[in-house]
Length: 538
Figure 1 (cartoon, rainbow, N blue to C red):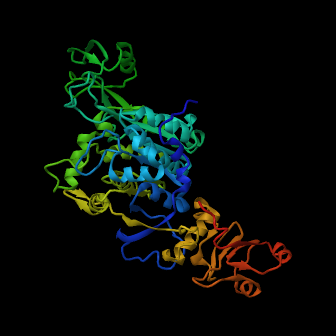
Figure 2 (cartoon, rainbow, N blue to C red):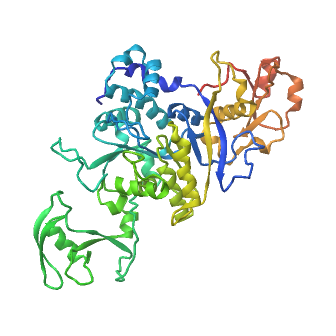
Figure 3 (cartoon, helix red, strand yellow):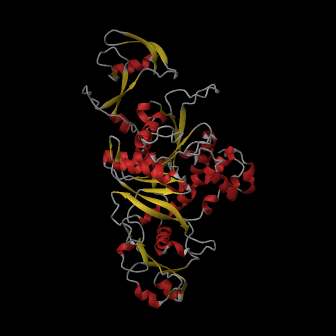
């Protein structure tokens, strides 16, 4: 398999493993659970909540690993397209001061000679590595991109996710009209969405990957095949097609450029799939049945019609309706409509999935999740990460307005926790950072021992259910203890064993030192782990 080489690659390929683990510092809860105090008495989260995180998305993704590794069903990201342009809010340019500083720290002096494409690849590679770890085995990632980096992105995704897990490239119509830039032969009206599975086989086995067409399916003519929507048969201007004549039920002859051949149209006509206007002499449309949309098992890669997935203009209008104070200048250069993200989420997940967007921008992904939950009663959860300063004023603010309602749009309800990136779990000497607090340390060790997925299974007893001061929890009949006291050395001895109230088949106990005989520990299935030496570095 061909791989892509660029200046600085050697420095960033393994960098994701070196990113320090930082805790998430919750600032507030907004929405339904404002006053519940849900985190007050537990050592680890009792249920997944919606999260909006302000901070570098590389460090934020690493901070999510202990709780979410292998649990994210759908990832959508809209990273910088690397156009080199500076915009009002969103810096679509990897030459930004933050990226330059990071490249200087990670790549070294080579960064001074990096081209714009090299810098973009250095920025993206470690982030994609962490996203791959967070993705569930039956999950999928969708990445928006344009011509500037599409070819490079495809090659590094083949390397990280595996070429055999490439599901396809969606062609999405980003705008109705031709761009103002007339310097090129071709007008750029399309973007791409690259789609990769964590494991293509498992993605198919889990029952997703089916068409989820938006639209109001109805059956006004009592069609025996059930509810349907229709797509125009006339080809869009400039999109090719076949020119021939069609005779309407009233006898009117229409000579146009049609979407498909006359043979295909005749087949649809014989199958009763042609839908005419009430007058009977209008442009024909072709029926698409709901059962096909839900059961066909594949989704076309051409998302061209605006009534299907929307476009940038729809997204602009959506943002201006939410933020009516934005009037004179566009807030984002390539915004995505919530309808587009709703289709992506519906295509690759279910009602209880976790959806992640680590280039959150204006918060469209959260908007889409909340819309879907309201529509079908789902319990999807979103995680947004935004590194820019507008994470609070735009990203979180949009979600607040969607929850509460805006303009004539009724609120979706819901809630989220807002976080800042906190201090690292380990200090520069690789010792525990006691400044983050004991509960954060306990939470980290619990997830590092049993794994993010196992920690949330029903047979994992949570610490709040165990009346034992130092017990982290119990999973698969193995108990975990963290015998830790700030500024005091702890010893695993007979006196400590007498304080343990949870019976297990095996015991894993963290302490500063152990004086129990090895034969006794083997007999009682006790595993001693020294603090901090044996704490796993994820």
